[in-house]
Image 1 (cartoon, rainbow, N blue to C red):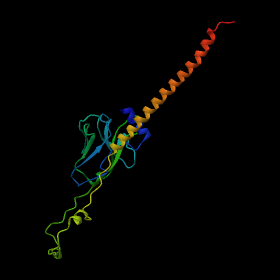
Image 2 (tube, rainbow, N blue to C red):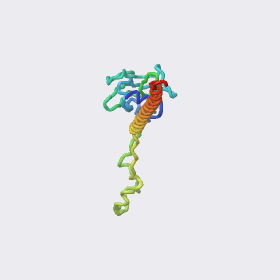
Image 3 (cartoon, rainbow, N blue to C red):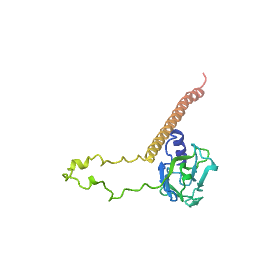
Length: 218
């Protein structure tokens, strides 16, 4: 399975990447949890959480990192725990400060290959207070009675919209992996047919030579 993952990464470098939430927000002094998923086959690989101003995370910038197991690793106000069954590792940031805001990366450590990673923007800001239900404008206290909306109006209300579900990258990876297996199978079949044809051709060329050697000399 790992060799197919390597071939898939070489052919499609944007596939099977780590998927994070993209952005998280937490109040000062509070905590926030970041869940990052990874593809099948990387359960035993180390997972890391780092902070960087660019694309690469060097060893000195990694805040916490697992050793490939599901054991929780604690850092300075930061912890990381991997779940092999769900293929998700969770990074928890506690006692947030303004200095913690910035761009981070959650990723999977790979040897001799680029690490799988995804950028996460952490914002530290106080929660926006919700308006009190009693604080209403005078003109909004009394509204003329309006007829109840019809079924068509309630179904197609501008505010009643649905958010399209995010297409899971694992489905794309699975389809590309199946395509890669089919291509490899076809290559093996073509190689077997080519070797068999060469063997039959060489065998037919050797038969007349043997018959010419066995003919008696006049």
